[in-house]
Image 1: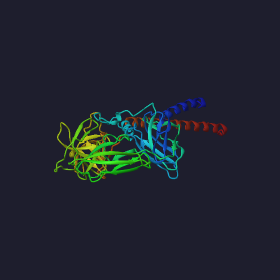
Image 2: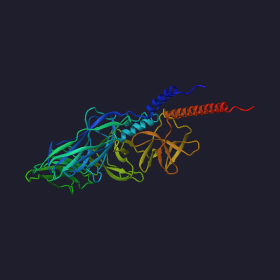
Image 3: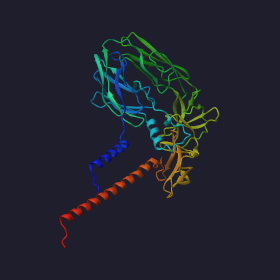
Length: 491
């Protein structure tokens, strides 16, 4: 019998370690350094200052955080924070842990991550005619990028050098789903000078959800906006750079048809410097502001038109308003549903209802016989491409969902019904239509790679079991032979 020695086993163990490490471990992506810097070189008590958090590079990162920022809470009052202007699609969340001088924040590009996961999981099931966001490159930069900006108010008791510093940094991940190494760089400090301020400028100006034209800038003093006939009051919010400045707003209520002048007067702390900002708000004599247009993700231009009184609206939808390009337009909403219904037309089509997703800018013609509505989702029956295979064991069938009958497929035991549907984000796939709960959810099948790995696992497990049995049998025979040599049989 051949002896199993360390020389024989070690190469096998090394090969196994290399194999499994390549499967289960992930390489850390190139590292970045996190730095802090105040935009202002100095400040006075009452001023609003901005602290920028920057990465030395941005290697296709899709999420980061939690990241902790410490600050002198005795001298600074946290007002809020925004994600960096370059990080389009990122959603930022933050918290202020009690009894600490910390701001903890995270950000994630959910759409990019979902697109990557769906692209990897349903590559064979995707509709090739769909223009999906998953085909777009994830933002990347080799230069420093501001990922977040924190606003602080300088307290009255602040004097001298006021600091901010970095705490825990974690959770950075890139588009390859690999962790990105991050290290702490420089903190930040600012000199606070105690003197009476003559600053009479605004740090922010807004008029509810209206879009100001031009975009707000502290050095621009005249703006304009348009509202529909339904709007009689506008919530104007103005914040001065210096806390001790006095801000008054006049003319934002009881708007009349035509032009209305809203004046925002800022008086500096010294009582001498005064600046006046003006918003000209035009109130239309129609519920629909004229000239409002919407361009969807495909580049198609839609014009809003007044809807007729005979317009039939789906059940559970109610009339509301939404903002398009900073202007208020009528729409129809349903609680829990992301998309809204709007009445528009294109240059080549007649007016009609369209399903509009404000997050993805996708538009679809509303077709009652081809759309399934549930509490939080609108799904449209889509034509199945030739390269998308129907799951094994399913045959064509008519499926009824509520009062809508659509073409779908049913399993051999009639227990599962599926249909090829397109979601609000434009991606199409098979969905299960649950006849018991009335719910709709994606149908999941094992991919070819999953089946291959399962097959390999079964083969390897079978080989390992066979080897274990052979070794056990050889061990038993060897031990039995030794016992016979020690105690020979008597004749």
